[in-house]
Image (cartoon, rainbow, N blue to C red; front, side, top):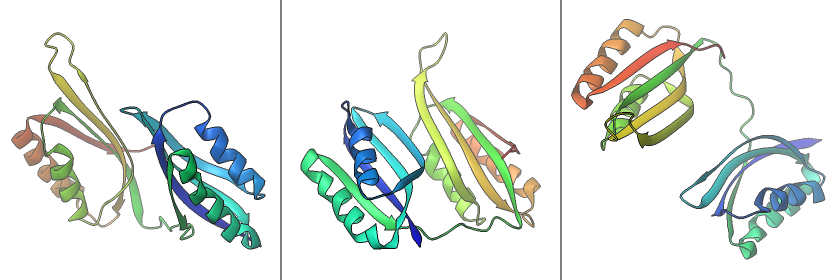
Length: 175
């Protein structure tokens, strides 16, 4: 019988990090199922879901944690199983505007207070064309309860957009 584990990692970006992780998983008979990884500010970080036999879980957990000897911080968690998305709408949220503190905080508060879950979120700051000002952009996949009043949510997001001088768009997701 197999078990799913999820682990996160972060370490200085250098060649061979993913190879070291994948070799560790493979050495314990594990199967790499899903991952999201990225380099930010010289650090390479990710989240990985693997499947391994129940007998190998303790050894794999210890081996992953042992990668600290290679200047890699790892946290291992048991998978909580697949979450049911019945009764949820999948929407895409996009935010664009001049960068300023509080954008993520304000929008995430509005979502959490309505029991809306963020399943994915990517943010970036870049130079705006023409002005060169810092431009903040976020794209998030969110799961919204079917019964939620989307008009009320849009009204709240519009108020946040006006207060922060950003544009916030909400649309049906293809996921």
